[in-house]
Length: 345
Image (cartoon, rainbow, N blue to C red; front, side, top):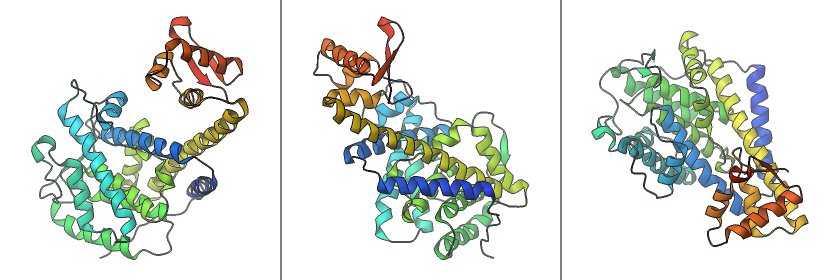
């Protein structure tokens, strides 16, 4: 037997693929500074590491995840959660290093990704890099509901061979659909005792990256999944509930990627507009930093501005914020002692 994915290209899928291609074209053409891209890549890695582990049941806050991934200690956090988060970074670095070597995706690589993800977690009970030898179940980490029962363990080795062979030999299929199919199929096989979801999401990312769809590494798909886990699990269940037809799953997958890419494109447009306005108004480097941080949905507080510019007095920073408000680039919310500044581009 060989893997032969069953799905249809619906209007929803076609529309989402078009949006993704537009976003890809924007990224290739946009004049985005290398400094901003590097900063955003670091931020995206934090977001992806946080959300992909959060889906699986870790309890770290975003602030804790950011501190841990930038080398700081968080003494109050669960050591197992910390290990899972830092393991993801190592696994992502493995994937990133693999992209440029031209080698096909192999079982060995998938097992190595898994090994990096679960090494040292819960006493290595997840058997890092080893296919399971017992039955396991896909469970909603919030509700503990059994979502589905994967194939029996004796079927795993052959199914993994079929998946890898399909990845090597597929031709003419849109790389985004290939990534979505690979992600679902690994979740469906559930070859490992634990860490299958994280491994599947990284496999999907690897499939995208290797075919030129890295989008400058400025997207996080796990954030989309974690926002509404019910629909994420529903999309996965839809395949087995429809005689292994992957259409509904692929609709969900490409819509999620298109949504995240649209957000990235909006950020790119804003940062280019910010660069133009900074030149027009002769903004200082600090003022530009403030304006960029104020693009975040949560805005910018004076305390955060002080943290970003620790060698500058509070009075100077307040004066700079006041200047940005006066020329219409920032708007203020909140009382005097609890002010928050938002970009007004």
